[in-house]
Amino acid sequence: MATQTRIPVLDLAPQLESLWGELNQAVQRVLRSGHYILGPEVRAFEEEAARFLEARHAIGCNSGTDALVIALRALGIGPGDEVITTPFTFFATAEAISQLGATPVFVDVETDSMNLDPALIERAITPRTRAILPVHLFGRPCAMAEILELAGRRGLKVVEDCAQSFGARYRGRSTGTLGQLGAFSFFPSKNLGAYGDGGLIVTDDDALAASARALRVHGARRKYHNETVGYNSRLDELHAAMLRVKLPRLEAWNEGRARVARTYGKLLAGHPGVIAPAVVEGHVFHQYTVRVRGDRDRLQARLAEEGVETMVYYPVPCHRLRLYQESHAGVACPNAERLCSEVISLPIWPELDPGVQAVVAATLLDLAGRG
Image (tube, rainbow, N blue to C red; front, side):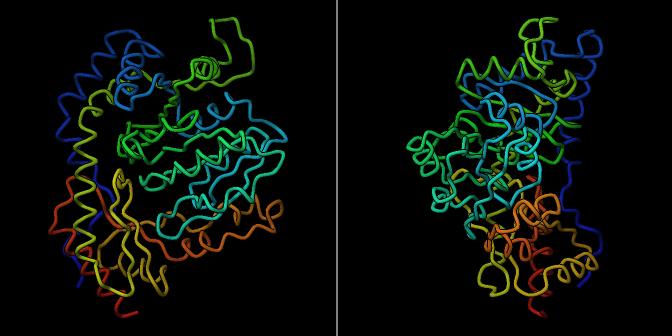
């Protein structure tokens, strides 16, 4: 049942067209201002993002990866330290830990939420453990109450990886504001995406905010008075200006993604070969990721032949990457390993037409039923 036209996994055109005039005005405003680095647009966006997230401080930086690195560095994480995190995530989560000379300690995930399993964290704690780095994967908040209780009891810090969860809420609070720091990404495909790389660090701690602000500009709290080796990691004025256009629409876009998720859930319900994700409170569905039985890779190839584009996030768990094969040879995370062979992400964007969703679901179920 080949579709007449290809259905992409993400279509940013509707959003771009609806904002075209305002985005152009924002770009022209920046170009004519003469301020291109850490100017008024970045300051305004930081203030607006902090209000949106209900955080005391928001610090723009060059990417979501830099946000993680700087957040961990602000806590003093370094060589000899261990940071507990999930193996079922994009490599940047573990990479940020390794870049600082610390060791990522991988703890398995829950199969339903696909997030870090809080019940398994405590047994992974050693005298070298300094922090926990949970990831709100695909926009679903982690079980933060359990993670925070454990961290408080064991004297550990918590940095939230919110690359995929801008606008997600856990028990009424924004993800990123629950631990000591939160790190966000504005990669173009994100729910709140820039037109290039960008990132944000949030915290309620004045000292951590000051440290993060210094680290993003070569370790200087005052220009030309460098105190430590930092980074050149600044959110561009152009990106900040365009993100300011987008931020007021984010809640509506996230509601649109949840609406798409509910429609998919109804269309896929009851099929034994496809397990749909739950629609839980606060989930913003950066991705709509299902689990499939049988040969996932063959199924994905056949979907592509039928004109339905999908993605696999992620085909290899971090502890099985070549980089960590030797150092983490004894690590076993069976749930993450199984998920990596089962997951497939379907097309999703806020304006996705229900009729197109019906085609996607029907094609998936037809092919999954054939085995």
